[in-house]
Length: 346
Image 1 (cartoon, rainbow, N blue to C red):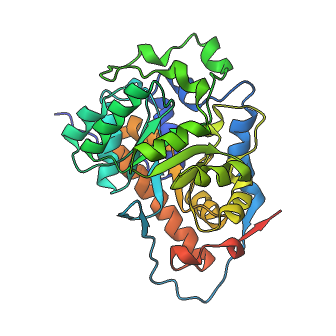
Image 2 (image 1 turned 120 degrees about the horizontal axis):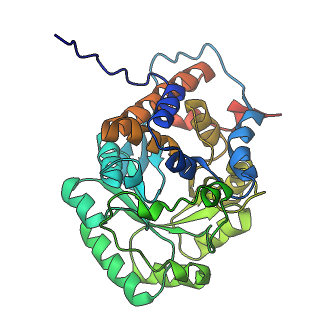
């Protein structure tokens, strides 16, 4: 009689990454992890975190650590959400639906890409109480946008995210050399949005959007202080500091390196951050430099690959465990105690 071996689930984020890679076809894996051209921005996103060193406080009684934060009217277990990622059914049969289920298990947010493989209607049918941020890459033609906003408002979307950092297509050497087209892999129910209108996106579109909807508006792709200020002047409720995970402009600045300057510029406004976050200590560094909320993309997909929605939820648990450990070792008992004083930049 054969004895069933219990599957060993990843116990660290490093092991999660290795297991996900071992389960994924090489061209799909390359599509997920690659960046633009020589991948300089992609590398900088991860490497730049090393410059910021922890400056811990001791003897502060960290026996009770509170990681909860309020975001868009929802109390999160800790300040981590899921970034928008398209074509997820190439990694799991149910793609974004399983990402949604994982997000729901963690009571966090899924940001749904406009090139999601699965329609938002289908996701809400299966996960009706999900916290979703709905992303647009284009705000024209207006008729299409109006219909989309009416639909997502009725469904119960919590906010709109405008992806502003890819007005034109970037050139990814690895994906081109692999002759790999993500659109041809995995089942799809979501019709392709009018991406040809992305290059025409401008600040007047944001002003129009603000007048049309009462939903909170988030501008994603902010990498300098001037754009941060202009976002709020045009009606945004929050900004998302991001360089598209190194998948847009190459030779760009690491997201973490602009965060402190942007925070000083916009004072008490809401800032979401992504770019190179791979550990719990990365989350603490981002918050200390000015982020309210941190977001992860590729690590979420690794969880999806390894074990569907449970894998996504487990990924969040691993991040949370590391984050709590880092908070305690730095002498931080709650999110408000994570500030500039925790970090030294060398």
